[in-house]
Image (tube, rainbow, N blue to C red; front, side):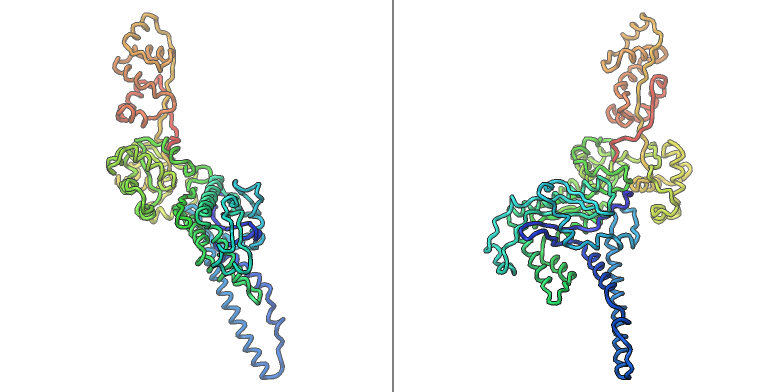
Length: 564
């Protein structure tokens, strides 16, 4: 399955305790109800089976009246089912912003035919399988969770503690030993998505367990859920109105209402910020996969790991609208984060952004690592005319790709395949490409920013350098003479020093000393931007020196692993 096919189908609340294995809540619930309606429609007898045409005129007219009523009723029911199907399909939201979901994609999923008792049974594992990651695949459905044992934090349930419960006078209080928050995905989801949902399920369960220890939260919520299920299941006709049941559950039960919010936030790719029982913060961001299954944002790395890769000469590329992101930030968010988001520009390095936001460089790097961790920004090199860009392996080549249409709508009169063809022509600076485009710097910058944001192109501006030691014949007398003129650099091997001494015969002493000062970076692990920052040198001066010493240096192009 491609990464673009990773969708959240459903969220489920399963428990186990003295009342047995229970499934108290699932969302969205409409697909399950729609499948039930479909089965009932199929099982209804036809009109020819239920009615026979009488011969008496009065009876004939009454019968045809009922026929007309029955037909109109069936048409109304069909219209309702059609509306339900449309609502169901509109709920299927992709994890990637560039994917357009086909309306019929999940209408026939086997998940909607699973009964509550079956789901409760398969999602309530034995104690030995609890407090660890849970993963179960059935056909094309994947259940992801983290079943958590609750009994070590369970308060002793007494009849007095449930005095306000509608069912407290008829049965003993419900004791919950197991809590399992389950996310249902399409089978074949990438491991990074599965790991993210494992962590999210674990965090929600940990928050609920904490509130159970503090305020008996889970006990109260399960008692409420149980009473609502009992009330709407006690139907004399034996036909439970599940639609009213789940609406009541969402309205009255805080835990169910918050699980519904979690589903909607995650399915819409929004940053999840919620307070379990209005007390414990759960903040999470399920990683998106806009780069394809093989390459994704470093969303699962902790901010500290991301921080170690960020350098002052890097820049930030916002992947979401800055104003919308500021609106999503919590009320107690640091003002430093807001100031940084307001001044972020892909054309300015972090060092310059620190001055613009009136922050220290360390603050900017730390805030940037959090933006990358939450999938709201990526690390790039500042966009400039000397940068080299090439097509990404996952760049859309289909002429009917939605990205091509979006490009044309964003940049009127321009055709994205023309730019893709130019960027695939070879490793050339951006300034040379613009000779063909003949665009203003502002317009070209907007186009490059858009193409980087949508992973159509990537930067290959990195030059890794290696020092090639070629020992030649050099007299001992000449070698001793040159050695006195050059500094004794401990990071150079004897073979490298010999090669430089041989080469120094035809070079000026200043150039040789300058070159030897930079030799520490010629190990294949540093690139031009590193040297520019560490030595405070312009790019042109470094390239000029490399051209002079091209017989003892090797240059090659690589993608920087720090770019995220």
